[in-house]
Image (cartoon, rainbow, N blue to C red; front, side, top):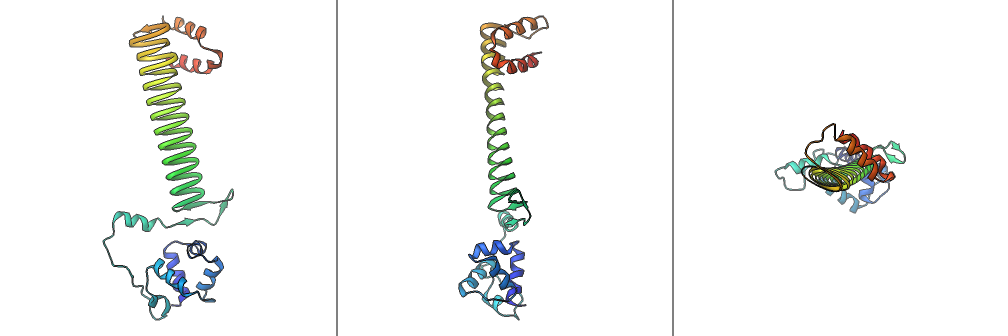
Length: 264
């Protein structure tokens, strides 16, 4: 087996393209192609780099009669993390979509479908993820899911978005254990229109303890304009609707209608 054949074989075993191997070694893709075709030969320092990258001896690379690769590093027990890293070699599609690879899997991934520790793409998954559809520990996207999540539609332990769902949620529409929003639902809920065990609202609050201009509470109702304690009956609804229509500004009419639907 020639030197070029061995380079091609080891490159493919590591799931590298010629372009990716060229980037690692700091040479052109054409150089890698010529090496693998045995048309040209590389400098000694590049050969040493290949030996380290492929974890093989110079004898294996240079001697055509040596076809069994011998590792140059001491053998150790393979851990689950080692197995994961072995499978997580960079992969990149040659097909392009909107100027990006169709898929890219790597430490810093950028593609239509991107998976990596840092990922950017239309669909992205990563420790730090940015995309239209984003999933990650730190996630930013139109639709975003993560421990810390920011997006138009956002879900996570800490969530910020137009529509936010999370343990701590902040958004135009927010739902969570601790929730802050124009329309807010949560154990502790703060907003213009709020519902929760402890509900604090600028205009309307519904919950066990409710505090707002219009307060409807199971145990406590503290309302500046209207208060009701206990379960709402059908007879109460016309009066509630009347108070809502009379006291909610017109620019919040959409939120008022949502809350009417919620109450009814």
